Image (cartoon, rainbow, N blue to C red):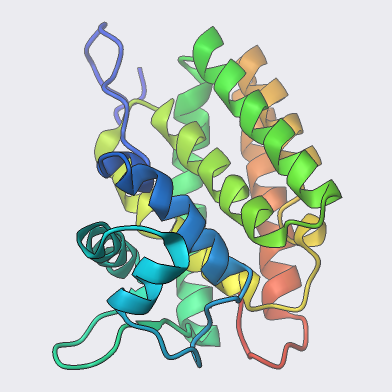
Length: 236
């Protein structure tokens, strides 16, 4: 067995997605607030406070604070004492580093996922792909970007290596933010069709194919984000 995988025969404990570490109704607030950021209804130039977000999302101030704290841990929101919260603006260097780190992590994670494909996990991934496809068709760009990130995090859960999946969880929201700030179309940045091909390779346990597809997928993302001319100078 790969030394990066769990040596236990028991099913691995699922690594929680960012929003699953929050309790309802905060769990519902996280995707709504993140979508608003990814759709740039809230951007780095926006002046907002906990109170204004409370009104915008009809949520309690305590719930808003918990979600902002979570997003700050994911490098999406910048929180500083005695300052308004603000949306992060990753530069090209930060984006490039995050993409490089994602490649290192996801190359290992997708190979490990091929060793333990479970029907319920595959069903969940296909459900995310379908929701992502619908979001793209309905021009809900922020939702599509978030769901694309969730796909990668759910795939990482299947690998059975919680620390590595947790590491990926620290990178995906940041690169989602970078994608949102780019001028590329959502489908050209992280196509749901590529996700579907990945799931099919994982389901077959085809380690070589899955690794190749993941590398091609990340190559496509990197080329689109780092080689394109974007007025915000970054994405990923």
